Structure formats: C-alpha cells, structure tokens
Length: 102
Image (cartoon, rainbow, N blue to C red; front, top):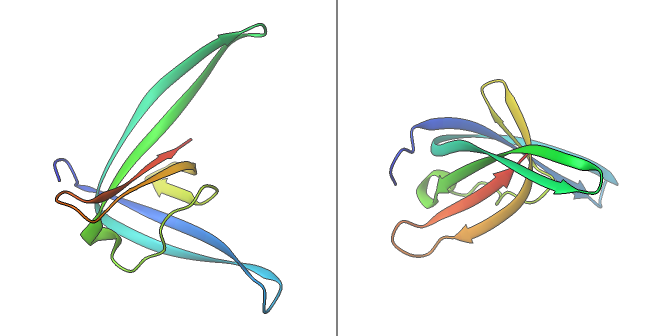
C-alpha cells in the first residue's frame, strides 16, 4: 500500500464480564498511512469545524491485533484521536482496515 510509512498506537478498550471491569490493550502498528482532513458544517448556531484523521492499516500490519472499534483511541505523535468509524476492507488485494477518528 502506498505511503504506509507511519507508526500509530491503537488503544483498544473492552469490557471483561468476569471481573466486571474495563480492560485496555495497546498495540503499536508500524507501516500505516495517516493523514488529516478539515471538515466544516453550518447550521442555525453558526459554523462548526472539525479535523478528521484517516488511517489505513494494511491487513498484514494489523495481524492478530483486535480490530479497531468506535471509541478506541489512535495515537500518532502528539495527536490523540477517538475512533469514529471503521471500514473492514480485508480479504482482497490491497486489503486494509480504514479508520476515521477525531
């Protein structure tokens, strides 16, 4: 996959019903793409701005790590972003997981 030269940390949180607690795990993913896009919307309260971070994780990079889910956290350098949406595009040539976060 083109431009997959970044390293991010995926922080995955899950509920452990046996101990009735949340558990978290951190996985370092080397060889992903990362870029940002500015988005804006106007409504009756004015102009609203957000920065969306887009990360593509090649299938071979994800390996056996947990698939990101909304609410997980991605860290890239000094940027920490909460996962909003996940698109699973694995299982074909160029397979990857596409993540949007903010």
